[in-house]
Length: 203
Image 1 (spheres, helix red, strand yellow):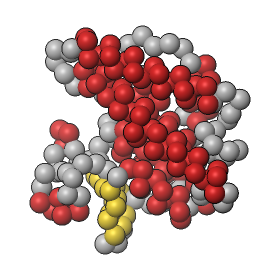
Image 2 (cartoon, rainbow, N blue to C red):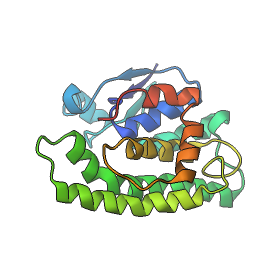
Image 3 (cartoon, rainbow, N blue to C red):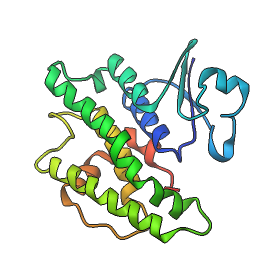
């Protein structure tokens, strides 16, 4: 029995859902986090002491951290297998980590202020959007002439980046148009695996 704990409004849960669907793994998703609670309950903390989502539970094996889940799925799924070439594989790892350490953190304040705060702080929003534009420009330049983030096939770097870009493009704010980023995103967002992960309104 495979279970994934986490609400679909979480960008990190979206990554795990997309990967599991691309791998065609059977699983049950259980809402947790945010308004759903659960994450502070002792049973959940016994699985994930951080009290965060997602958490993957699989026949007694438990794994948390969304990018660790991406790597775990890729290690067992031909559809998402990491490149055999060590340098290309390193580039996949690079972009997966860049999403988590650079792009998503830069837009965090804008997202929270625009969607989760009753009286948004416009200065925080402006600063977050400006920081995010720097990373959007980096990704846009990287994607020039590319169908996928790394190499010639879809992989976990596309999933990690795709979920972040989905949030970025759906912020109710002005952004500079990034044609390479948008072209790439529109290409991967029509994949069946994206439907469940990105199907709900951003918020």
